[in-house]
Length: 365
Ligand code: F6R
Ligand code: MG
Ligand code: MG
Image (cartoon, rainbow, N blue to C red; front, side, top):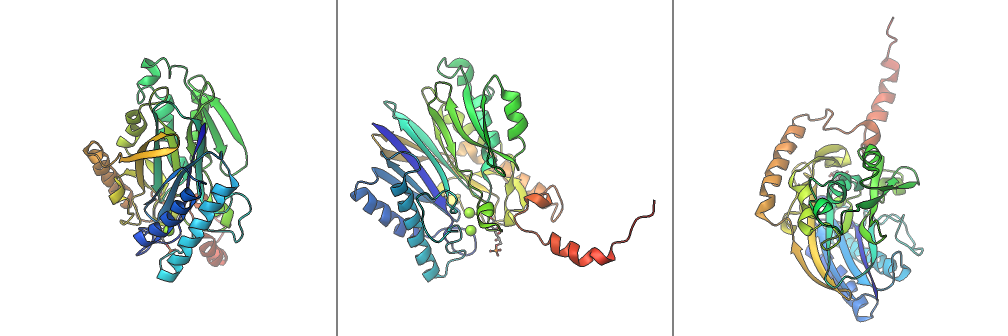
């Protein structure tokens, strides 16, 4: 039996600004998931949130991109958004950008990370969920997990990892992707994925073909054609025996790094790993948050999660992220805190330039 794990997320409304999805909305989503489980569409599910994004983790046997499962996610978000509107929540229905469902939630606003797997005798995966950032925020971390032996000792020590992995990289502004073999093509891979405004890792495979990781790379602003908030990506990563150990999967986040997002989707800030209870973006609508939930799974049935960053082992990362946040905040409206014009989710720059145009004079050479 093959098992599909589908993680589908959307911002459908939150309390007090873009901070936190309230329990009432999560309960409403949980209700539709329970019904789908009763009807045997799902084997199991887990509903949670990271900041203002609802996360629907679903297991089933229908494969990726399945119409019924995607429709279930869409209807669940719709129902949650209706309640959010009734409650007067902020940004109610924000990420539901299309009116009618047409077979797949891709291109409709929600973010999707899915994988179909042949379960190992003790299957393990980690679900990552981020708020106030974009998909390429995971580039550096997944490189370290799957291609950097200084992070993942297993690449050197474990014969099952020694061959390396394949990275599928998407041009998030175009519609192309390219697959790299590591370690053979590590430098070519890095040449692309270091350009986080253009390229995002979409999937990672073992050399023998099994899926290892899947990341939501949907760009909501491209779908909407205007500012609607950052994409707030999610990611599924398989761990242990033949994959990086859970600890190797988590370790890259112990040293925070700067990513794009934060306030108005227009600033650089550190990615802060937190336990579920602290996944609330408050200071300057951030700093951007990341949670990691590790599950065991047997014939589609979920066991867990273990809340991985709710651990003193990540206290120093949080402290460092706060210091890094102070360093960026010191720059106010200046770069490098402010993103370059093409990367800001919204900006008054075109209007300001238009207004000032008549006042610009030629510089005499
Ligand atoms: C970032 C985000 C927030 C909002 C900010 C302004 O993705 O969602 O930082 O951009 O709070 O929100 P509005 O424009 O709704 O007042
Ligand atoms: Mg929001
Ligand atoms: Mg969000």
